[in-house]
Structures are given as C-alpha cells and as structure tokens.
Amino acid sequence: QVQLVESGGGLVQAGGSLRLSCAASGRTFSSYNMGWFRQASGKEREFVGVITRSGGNTDYADSVKGRFIISRDNAKGMVYLQMNSLKPEDTAVYYCAADRSAFMRIRSVFYNDWGRGTQVTVSS
Image (tube, rainbow, N blue to C red; front, side, top):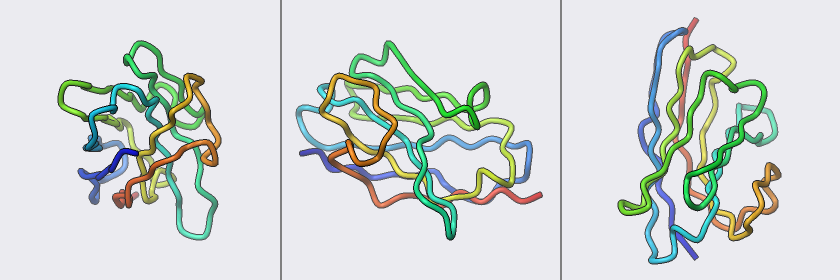
C-alpha cells in the first residue's frame, strides 16, 4: 500500500499553467504505475494520464494530449502533472492514484490507492 497526497491546485486563468504534485510514502513507490484522474462537479471521474514505473512511458486522454505532461522522481517519491494551456473545462478535482499492475490502465477501478485530491479551477 502507498499513501498519496496531492498539492499544487488553485485558481488560474484560461491559457495559464499549473503543476500538480503527488507525494507518495512507502518503500515500493517505484513498483507502481501512477495515474492522474479528475472529477468535475456532477460528472464521473475520468482518466487524465498514466506513467509507468520507470517513467519511461506515458499515456494521456485525448482531451489533454499535447497540453499536459506527467513525470516522476522515484528517488523523491513524487509524481507531477504539468498542465499548460489550461481551459475552463479542465476545472475539476485532480487525483493521483497507484496501480500495481505493469499495464498502463485507464480505468479507475484498477487503481488500488488514491490521494484525496486537489482542486483546480480555470477561469475564462
């Protein structure tokens, strides 16, 4: 099991940038693929992106591809979500999650451990 804490959310104007961080505790952090998800008010939680254990591969939802970048620092137990060219429709609570599988999965049901989320609000 790994404990996750997100930070870095806030209010930003459309076109701006934010970097979210996810701090993980636990010795086996590098054994997990790490995903980012988001949930807008009144909507279901949706996949944003995923990064493999080594950080060598990433995958993104079409809605954020080319604007968001996921990275990780296993030595520090950190995962990051760099969000650029933000749009009002990116407004949501953002969550990081850990998946013990070696597969890059996009369904939230496969992720074992979750943070509490951080709010991102993009004003128009």
